Image 1 (cartoon, protein in one colour):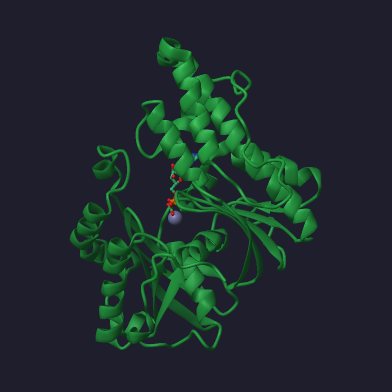
Image 2 (image 1 turned 180 degrees about the vertical axis):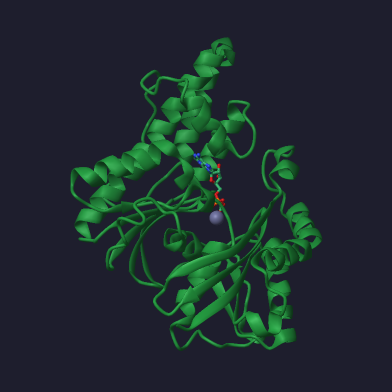
Amino acid sequence: MKSFTILAIETSCDETAVAIIEASENNDIRILSNVISSQIALHAQYGGVVPSLASREHVKNIRHVFESALKEAGITDFQKEINLIVVTHGPGLGPTLLVGITFAKTLAWHYTKPIIGVNHMDGHIHSNWLPGRSGEPAAPLPDFPLLNLVVSGGHTELVLMKNHGEYEIIGETMDDAVGEAFDKVARLLGLGYPGGPAISKLAEQGNAETYPLPSPMAKSKNYNFSYSGLKTAVLYLLRDLKEKAQNEQTKADIAASFQKAAVDVLVSKTMRAAQEYQVNGILLSGGVSANKLLREQLLDSSSAIGMPFFCPSMKYTTDNAAMIAVAGYFASLSKDKAGLGWQSIRMDANLRLS
Ligand code: KG4
Ligand code: ZN
């Protein structure tokens, strides 16, 4: 059976990532390597990602990450063994995207290889096609249409997926992304960056019923979200609690109450949309899909109505290039995208799914 070997590059934010996958004609995906160099430690001291520093780090690391990915995959002859190059061309930070795009275009030009630009969110969605997702191997993904809840540091989107590459955004955040809200509330509580893992860990020690916080836009009829009000509610709560806010148990209770409010609205809107759009299954993805409460609640609510639910293996929840490679693979199956040259790639920091 014919198989394609694909090299993918991801530099949209603070991870320099290169992966090599092998995809066979029946869409079996094998990961040959998935190398990630994270800059979390560098940005933690500033409480968030600094784009100019991030781009400098990508420049410093990308060649090494690329060579490690080749080595781990056992690729010794790029020209002969790699069939397609894939790169994230947006959305993300302009200066960091450009590093990956320039590197990928140079490879495509030098080796005269076809290249495909992938939307970062399309990549997150396709993390559910990587090995190890929940339900696998017992439960294969159902047929389209599928509903994706894509939740990351920059996005909160409900996406109706009619096919690979055919998307309709049916709801999105009006202000902050949910991951951003986790990061900002973590900063208010004096926890480190990134805030998501820190809040969910602390929340395990807390009681989510202690401080009822508003579940933003939970009652609105549409599928949009809003998180800036919830963050402000936490700010006011901390102000009102005065010295008590410094108490460790109080912080854990606030973390748990915040997490509950943030997750409840995601779950209720996802379940409502799944029924209205009569999808065959729900897929969760993006950095916030690592959140245990969100995974559990979506699984419980889906099971209650007999709706199949999937989420990616924990190791593919945050940014990686394997998800970009698999999105590129499915894009390459459509004739208008396959086999384009290096001149075809354009960076778009505000790229939207369509
Ligand atoms: O997808 P990702 O790696 O990068 C973007 O594309 O933005 O997502 C990073 C986001 C951060 O905001 C981080 O706080 C959040 O995902 N995150 C979590 C958890 N792990 C990561 N949020 C909630 N709970 C978690 N366990
Ligand atoms: Zn991401």
